[in-house]
Structures are given as structure tokens and as C-alpha cells.
Image 1 (cartoon, rainbow, N blue to C red):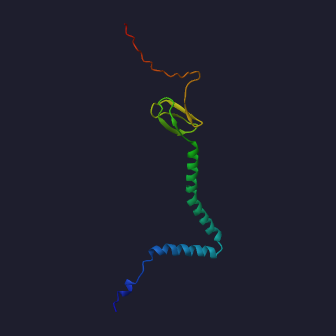
Image 2 (cartoon, helix red, strand yellow; image 1 turned 90 degrees about the horizontal axis):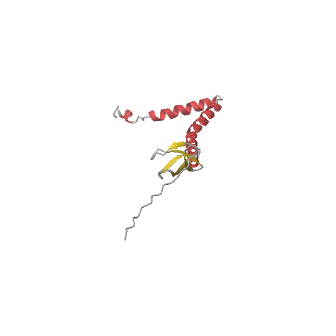
Image 3 (cartoon, rainbow, N blue to C red; image 1 turned 120 degrees about the vertical axis):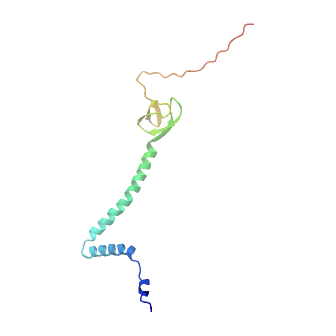
Length: 127
């Protein structure tokens, strides 16, 4: 019989050692009446796992309600912004205010917006 054959039967328990120690600590705490501590740790772990998931879902809901995508009233490019916030159009630089899902120009009171129309001129030839 080979004297090194026993070494070939040894198992690598390094990965299992952590779980055995954890189980032993939990069992010991439960046996001496500190089960409330174990339950508190488990509740804390569940909260640490669920809090980012719930936070992400709440952020998506808030963003869906407050993100506005509309055309700039000056350059007619598609712009996105948060409802109720002042911003500048990234294309033309015009200051805009987002109110009730639409973009409005930020202008001083009494400003009148006009649209220029290009009128082509025809010359009449003398006959």
C-alpha cells in the first residue's frame, strides 16, 4: 500500500469552512437566547438587498411622470427636459421653461413674438 494514498483522499474544505462557521455562530447565538440578533441581521440583509431595487423602481416612475420631450418653439428641434425646470435649448441656445409638458420661451413681460414670412417679388414686364 502506498503511504501517499491518504493524501489523495483529502478534500478541499476551504470554501465550505466559511459556511460551517457561519452556521455554527448562528446556531450558538440561537441556543443562548440571542435569536433576536440573528433575526435582526437577516432583516437588515433583506433591506439592503431590496432597497436599491425599490429605489430604482421609484426613480423610473418619477422620471416617467416628469420627463418631457417636445419641440423647441424657436428651432423646432426635439428637446428633452424635466417638467418645471428652466433650461437652454442645446441646438439654438434659447432659454426655455418647461410647463405642463410643453416648452415655452423665457421672455420679459410685454414681448411680442412675430413670425416673418418670406414674400417673393414678381416683376411685371412692360408690354
